[in-house]
Length: 166
Image (cartoon, rainbow, N blue to C red; front, side):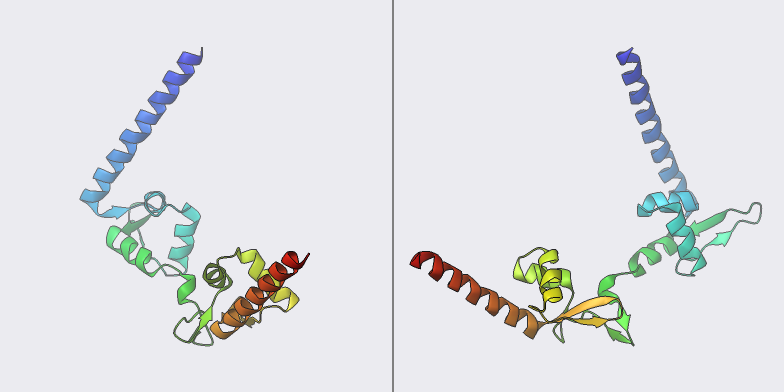
């Protein structure tokens, strides 16, 4: 019984492989894809593709013979290049995270300090690290990161001294 199940699963996998190969060969010749194929290519849900179309971030046309959307591969590639990126986010026309001006996200600050992001959130909550809100994002300036780093290095030295003295 287990062998039958295993054989059925292997057959399904082979069918899926051949299906995906067929669709990729088909899309290469036609240069247009459906919402489902676009979602598979971009590794997102169909809903994400549909929303991108409705928000006019992805160009698509409805076929004349049916009510299905078709997307040119060229448009899909353009969408992928211009897709939302937090690093490009703006607030009041200004970049939120701007390394040139010394403004970093919590995750970027955590990487700089080699600590988990949660530690940075906690430090901002208790007032040990100064952070500002820009829209929905927390922004931390380089000078505040450096100050926090020095304060923590000083605390570590004091901890070491006190442990030696004991």
